[in-house]
Amino acid sequence: MLKKSRKKAIKSFWGLEAGSLLTRYMNAEGKAGRTARAEIRLDKPKGTRLPLRVWDSEDEARLTVLPLVAEEPERESSLKATPETRIRDAMGPLITAVEKLDVTALEIDFLGSPTQLTQVALGLEIALYRFRRVIGREEPKFSVTIKAKGKPVAAKSLHDGIALGWSINVARHLTNLPPNLLNPKTYAEFAEGFLAGRKGLKVEVWDVKRLKAEKMNLHVGVGRGSNRQPRLVRIKYTGAAKNPAVALVGKGITFDTGGLDIKPSSGMRLMKKDMGGSAAVLGAALWASETGAKCNLDALLALAENSISGKSFRPSDVIRARNGMTVEIHNTDAEGRLVLADALDVAVSAKPKYVIDVATLTGAIKVALGPGLAGLFGNSRPLVNALHKSGQQAGDLNWPMPLVQKYKGMLNSNFADMINATDGFGGAVTAALFLEKFVGEVPWAHLDIYAWKDAPDGAWCEAGGSGQAVACLAEWLRTV
Image 1 (cartoon, helix red, strand yellow):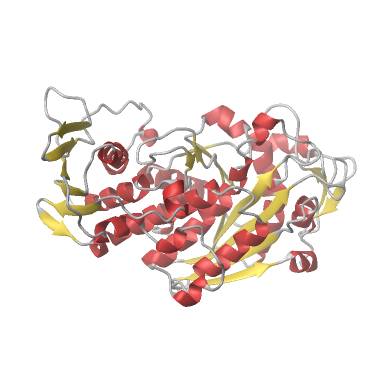
Image 2: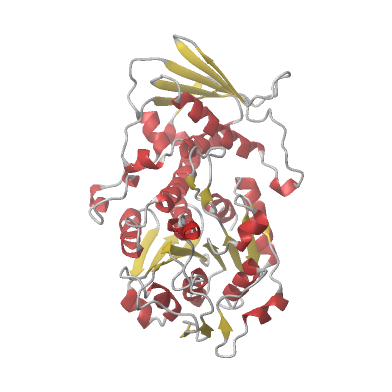
């Protein structure tokens, strides 16, 4: 729970002030009624391939969860789900089944190793999330007790799994919020109030006046068409005083009409999620604070709304970026890279050890990799390799993509140093090449994400914001 002083910073945290869902369910008072007893086993009994079996009787319900019984379908080793990921994802079907039963209590007995118990907590935290449950501040309908080989486990013993799951859920919830609630102003107020006073965190908000003073003309230009002015939120986490910081930069377009190059209605329908990269960066900073991670972070959320009005930026406009380069606007719907460019320049000016940006940047990467894999670009092979490995270990997958230097010529302009977008093929690559121009020699990686689940998947029990990249970043930050 948040302290009362922290709640004064903003009227509502949209239900997130209640904190971890699993902790609330574990602390819920017992009620009279039936109990569901679930046993999670890691063996592979002969004669069954069902990962979940349910027996429902008048007195009680019994469930057996077998996360490892099904065959792993992937051939590519770096795409194969680890046993830990399979344990996490098995919690989704378990919670879905329990919620269909008429029970007031759930007792879970995990028969695996203590280290894998963290994945049970992580999966349960993710699986218990429902948008309307959180924003409606619903009370738990059943209590949860967790045991390890018959011995009760306290919530504090599950802290690492709960902290990561909750950080993912915070990112999911922000992504799910409708754009009439979440805009650059309210988002910045949320970050400032919600994170205030948390261990190791300091939050600074740059309003449009400060953005102009910093010569962040690309960022200001994108937000010019909206009456909701742009913001930059800077979150600094200190967990290792002597180490150089890692910079994380998140695209935060709270709604994207496409601007004057307007999207069709089908392409605009989910554009509230165009701030999913910034939500992932905020989630990673929250995770660092909750777990006391031994790293330093400089996390920047580049917030704007890409709207249409007489003040909107136009195709053919030439805008000078914070780093001094001029950009000709070829397409106003390639706005995310513009706000990222200025924010990346702020980040690299502080001389970080690494800089990583996270963005719902291109449709082209989804065409190439589908919704479940982030595209991973970078100018440092060791950094790209480390993030790729971390994604596989965390069950938050990405795939390394080439920065084809020959394609830089596609960004040439007769009227400026470069254009902001290209027509034709290779859109994800040229978008990454555009961003590369703003990071200098700092080791840099770019995660092009989807930030959304189109249907329930594993531990994610409903469609909506996914919190993609939070787990990968957390896993990687453990190694920095």
